Image 1 (cartoon, rainbow, N blue to C red):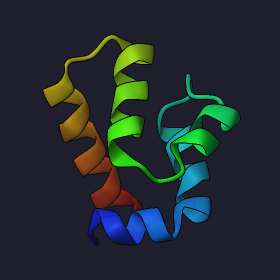
Image 2: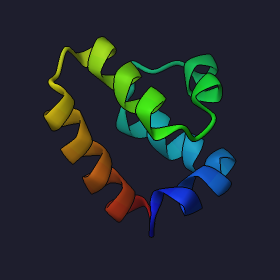
Image 3: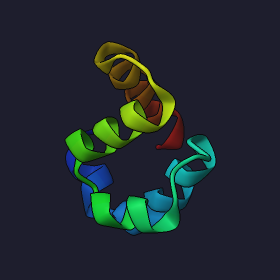
Image 4: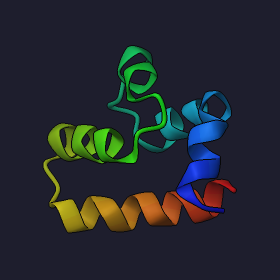
Length: 66
């Protein structure tokens, strides 16, 4: 699965993202609207991780969620 597919089905993936990253609120995930850079930036700010750590996490989550 690629990110375009995740973005196209964001409403379905939204709940999976919230369960993966519990510090994210429903409203924040709604605002992301499937934009990977925004999601990664949000995770980075909420969890204090590096850009690379977050990118790897999102890749792993995407592989698992598909």
